[in-house]
Image (cartoon, rainbow, N blue to C red; front, side):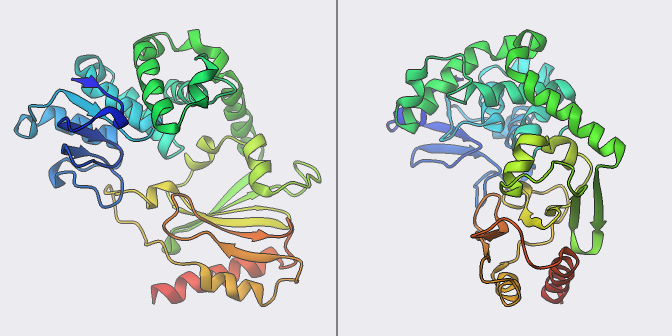
Length: 324
């Protein structure tokens, strides 16, 4: 098979991986919500679906074109696996972990994390080795060119990952630093299995009196892969002093099938409860269950006037009552 950019499909029969089909798609291999992937092929990651497709000749389609409408790690390794099936199957576990690191932010293989970091850097206009003009194009065009560019070098990235350390070195060091934070007890996780909830608490004043949002502090100081490697739950609270927020992980947005997940609940009512006791300088807002990784967060200011213990208690009560 060969890759063709999504916007150039132009009536050609195609197989779509990871994203959404168009009117000429004859087979979809995607974990996106409401996908039309055959039930027997379904899996948590799109690349896992692709490998099941390659193993099941009964589903094989007489089609030479594969495409995707967006660029990310799961999409790239899914396309690569159809374009270069023999090499992909030889590296199946590694590629599945690359997709897992990129999409779900956890993985069982350090090399896979480094490859995912490299792919992320390649898609970043400030870090990419590709011509900067690529990123000034409309997204549909830059996406197609990015696929074509990365597919050419991806076999070498797989076989010679250390060679690309300039692209994965910084996030890899952050990975190491985050592991040390856990080892020293500077970050702790408390789980509530009956609620499918994990609370990640960062030692108070550990990062000093950073005036930014907690999301910005986490982005610059932590790697989420070591965090999410430590919990299987998809309702997550991050807390650092008077800064905290609740999010639903990406796994709860896709068609996840490994085991049943507790449903995403609209946290708008919880936001209303919090706003009744929050000081007027702040307002709690939920981004919406349709977002890929929606959060319930404080707006207008960064620190809440609500004690974290009360926030946690109200959150627990909300989930318990909703469950009942």
